[in-house]
Length: 477
Image 1 (tube, rainbow, N blue to C red):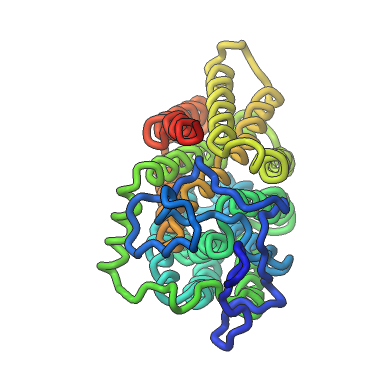
Image 2 (tube, rainbow, N blue to C red):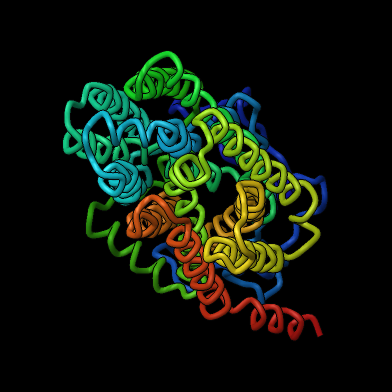
């Protein structure tokens, strides 16, 4: 009988699965503790595949429930960096372009609201693309859809660099987003292939350290590019990034989904799987909670170039520095979440604290924007944005982990639903921050506060953390 907590799957098979050099077996959690079941992340009730038989001697009361044993395999540094690079595609595509938004407005003779549609199009593309790529990766494995998506991303990005009109730029930003979705959804699915429970939450926080470098350096690079060339140079650099990611993923990213775990069905089965996932109340709750929290973040991303540069008169370089400082806060709190909080404090509790801080920061920004505290300068606004963005690291990794823990049978499809909801809600929020023009920060603050309040409502109403904690205590007594 194999040792408990270890996998008996072949790590070095000839079918392209994970080689032992990149991924090794592990029988303990990432912290070295004995594997435990996280009661706050009970699995979904319904699943399209039969639950595995419990091992001999298992508790009959837990029959049919998968046992989350923490780390199932430990991932090498190179694979971690590749996954971090893939999750960095959205901040690279968005943040490097942000300092150029006012210049694009002048260059293509378009309004600020129209130029912001280039962000909306890319975001909507990333949302819809995940719905396609996620089920594809459950059927054909992770590598093939990823490489195909990255190749299309390169072509679309190159066309954006030569776009003569705002309409063409919007169209190919949409295609760029559709293709870039492959990196996001497959990176998240690979993490679910490799990890369970608390270890998964910790690895998501580790990915935030790797991918968090992107929003720090992206606007800085974008600001420096604008010193030597125009906004089109930003897309040249993004195309080069796409080429590098394609090469390293093709060469060094192993396949993590074994053929026996792949779905053989087509569109009908994919839709049936999605319906089963959405029928799980808690999964849907975490999905919506993360989606609206992300929308509050994206309201900042899309509006801050105009708020900081047009309203408060900062240069593109100053904006880039402030954006980088906020990203450092995002990374630092992410490491606090992964290294200190997760495994010691319930993920639901950490998530609740993160949502409370986001809501408080949004309310403070709205009060400052409406003049309740009198005339405020750039520094108080920057502090409020720093707090809001940092608190996202207490919310977003934990919503992903809590939702994906329930969906081992369809990680790609579940990852697609999580990503699609976040990007769609973010895409809907983007035009709203510019409805009152580019000379007031009130729309940004209103959108952030409304989205954070909705996220809190979804968390408390659908995820019901208090009820599940009470049920857990009752089972222990």
